[in-house]
Structures are given as structure tokens and as C-alpha cells.
Image (cartoon, rainbow, N blue to C red; front, top):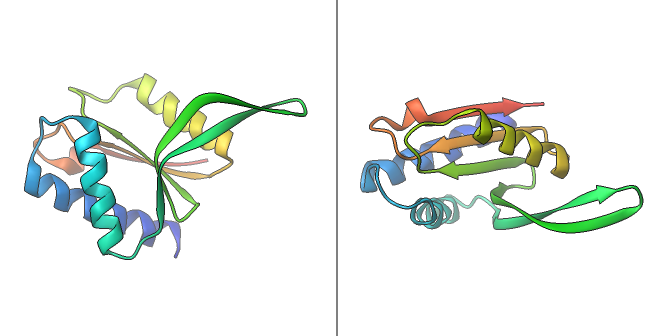
Length: 123
């Protein structure tokens, strides 16, 4: 599945979750519901996939975790905040670099219209 097709399916699933729940809940609630939708769509993913930091010849477990790693080629970071800002963008870009994955979605569920809270990233 190509990035656009995969990201569109994830976005469609996120919109379905947002349509049912609306804004204002905790991030973990949206994560679990989005995981349910992805499962129903037959999309493979991991929740809280750990990303080690490679330093010289050593792999260090620093506690970095991707909210959803979809099909081993798309990082999805979820938020439920008043407004996305540069720290959220820096987080997903760092995760993409550490995981060596070129594509990412940052989704803020705390929006009246979810499309206003979605950002795509390509390295």
C-alpha cells in the first residue's frame, strides 16, 4: 500500500473515531478506538512501538514510543491538545528519523473538525 493510500485510510479511520466521540477526551481513548478501527479495516499496526536510540555501535532503550506504527511504514502520533505546536512537530520528526521511517501523521483529536488537526510529514 502506498503512503497516500495508507495515510488516507488512517485518516478516514480517525475521522470515524472523531465522528463518534468528538473532541475533549484523553489521547489514550482515541488511540484505543483508532486501533479498533484499523483492526476492522485489516490494517496491520503496533501500539506504543519502542524506538531505540542508536549511539555509535550501541542501541539504547530511552523510552521513546510511537503511538501507532502502521504497516511498518507510517508513524502516527496522536494528541488531544488545545493546539498543535512546534514541539509536537519536532517529536514526530524525531521519531521518524530514529525509526528510519519517512512518513508520518500527527493527529490532534481536540478539534471541532478533525481535518483541521491533521498534519502529514515526509522526510
